[in-house]
Length: 194
Image 1 (cartoon, one colour):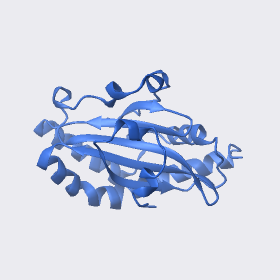
Image 2 (tube, one colour):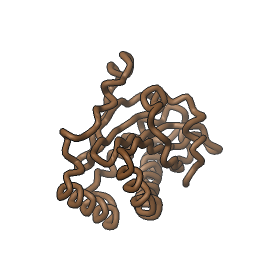
Image 3 (cartoon, helix red, strand yellow):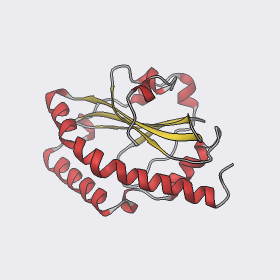
């Protein structure tokens, strides 16, 4: 479910220290009925068990394959032309924190993983993007929240983000919602939820 940007900005996440020059693009919540305050690591494990990009729905795989082909043709994803990683901004305690796992087939690279939040980044010629996952109180326990933070590179980056918005909102995020919420239900059914 889409949330207002304040659902992310009003929370005292550590990511705010690293991204004052980024804007909040999207905020979504994922239902995790019965989840407790300490279940964020279990949620991440459940999500990882659902696989990477190759295990996503066919429309999502097709969109990503198309994007990577266009990016390869136009040189959008050349690492030499990408912005510096946010790892360079990490304070000492976050540098020592576990990084988390990179997902196979996805270009998002892990920045850090804490007890109630994790962050991954992608930097290329269109911009710098952070996917932040946080664990927040909800009416029936706790829920997973995903915020996408962006720093577009110039006018082209802003146009690119506007052009892909319908695909994110109509295809990618709904597919993630189904997959991640199912991952939690399967985890809870297996006896993992409190």
